[in-house]
Length: 153
Image (cartoon, rainbow, N blue to C red; front, side, top):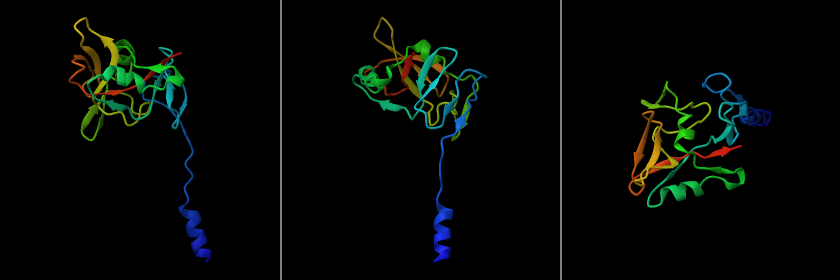
């Protein structure tokens, strides 16, 4: 009986949120806990959603993407200039593929296209590709991309 009780206690794990530090230049992000939903960018004054991004499909991707941002936090889709501030010139390799974003600050971010609210006069939408580190324009009717929300405090 004592062994069973000891084994049960030994197998219990307490997970506490940790204060983390990003790989970005010193001072770019404020201190944050591993459980925080948003992280503050001290260079821009923006608060960025940290969690696993949602993938949004056509036919009305920008409207759907904006609807995925938590209105209670004042968050919305970023502009292309805002989202480009998260690009990392020195990518991290995950499963053999580059990811051009600080994965400590933004864990589980896939390399791929991310929507912005910025459009061209022809109706194309700017996306940021965190797999290649490029900014592109795409046809919103035929493109699937992820959503990363921003709050402009």
